[in-house]
Amino acid sequence: MSPTIETNSYVLLHNFGTKKHLKKGQIVKVEHSEFGTIIKRIAYQDKNGLYWLAGDDPHTLACCQIGPVNATQITGVLLCNLG
Image (spheres, one colour):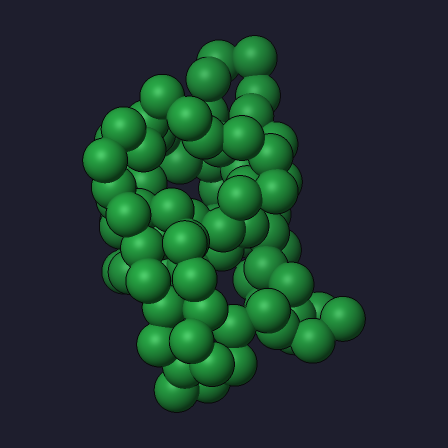
């Protein structure tokens, strides 16, 4: 599967009410402690309320490499890809 967002694309994100409406499959912007600002898809939410992320490109980081993130690290949800 190719990436949903191609290199050098513009994306429109929103952050109003982001923490309350997060769900599996959404593409989100995350401030990650190791990888900086990344855009990934929510793979699932674990029983502790942490989110696990995945990329659409087969050459991207795996869920276990990214690790779980808190909702507070999620700073936006994709509205539109202007690629």
